[in-house]
Image (tube, rainbow, N blue to C red; front, side, top):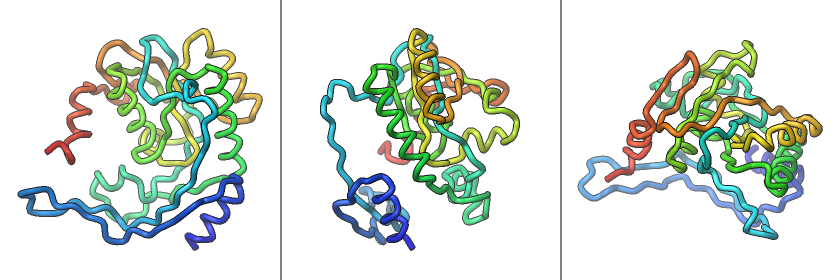
Length: 231
């Protein structure tokens, strides 16, 4: 089943996977530790992309206070197997669907994002993967030494806040956009038919604020983020 999924992705994205491997027993025991650190059994695939001009690459660190923050892509009720369920101690309990890839939508999203980056519209871009939107926001704040203030209201009221923040739906991005480029950025994705939701803005203060949900100090979040490997 996994091999079929990989074949579908490779052909759908028109991207060859040059190698693959399974990793069923990978662990490391830090010196003096009672228990090893182990990763879950994983299917690994490798693909390569070419960058014509490295100077136009966009990193994930937030750059400037006052810049706008957007989410690209649709959040779905896909909490099955999520990191949120792991840290909440829910184990294998079913929390909704496991994330799936809509290949045509994903390909269009990636192409449009590439166009935005190549056109100089995006100051920073971070994928939404393990931990969802909340983790991507925190990591972008860590990397740039800045904060962020967002609201979930522009998503509408169909999904609970927990899902909007921690769902791991595929093919989504967190983007930082200069105010002067916001209209062009929104228009680009609107024309492509890809969801583009304005979330809030970058802050100079080291805090992450989600309106009516929580506010946290970036330094405290970073300490928690580093803790498992901060020996």
